[in-house]
Length: 317
Image 1 (cartoon, rainbow, N blue to C red):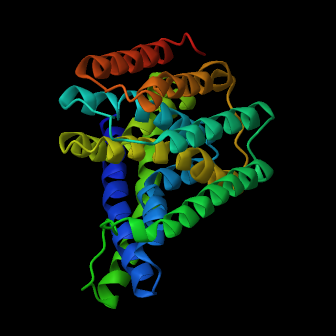
Image 2 (image 1 turned 60 degrees about the vertical axis):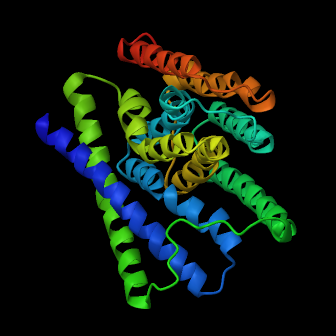
């Protein structure tokens, strides 16, 4: 078991480091090619920061372990709301009075409902994948048009990983390290997680929903904690909502092109509805600008703990 835990730790470490290298390389390559910074921020950064989760899901499908791929996304979306918002709220209450993410929130709910409908229609295959990716394409196109239309009225935001002095050699090195490290990290994580599942007699679906999902959500957690401490509620909420949208439409869309993903009955009975339920739960905080106080944060963490307890005790199987 120690070796399996080391594989998981090594996999997560590689995913974080390689993902950062990929973002740095891709961002500076795009800027060097003359792509406007506004578009780079909405596309290249979004795709790059989700590359670790995508590689984990793709690796799981390629290893014929689709339950881990699905669990990674469904569990991450649940953990993003309950933990990635809950923990920062406990550390520094998230005040939402200046954060207007209503439109993005409604898109997230729509993406959740769309995926649930597709999940009940049978195994997620290439036709479902194209529908998910098509929806993502429409959303990104609309966001880019809106951003360009309001460009004159907004300040150019600092782009993660941008370095005006980065040379071509360094850009190519970052890209190579990122593209090489991500598959290895994903393989280590999936291999270690599936071995843990076998050792403890836990289903791969539960491992994907918990261990893998929380592990791949750690970068989002770090970002949200930093944003909450700085008083940037818009960044904390936008980080979670944007990640959840991309997880459902982008990551599962790409994974569905790689191979079929049958949805385990446990997910149809419980986990999809928990994911949707916790998304609906935060609606008053989005529309009425209620603050995420420390007590609310404790409550969100408690809900997640109860959910994991149910999974681990087999009541959902």
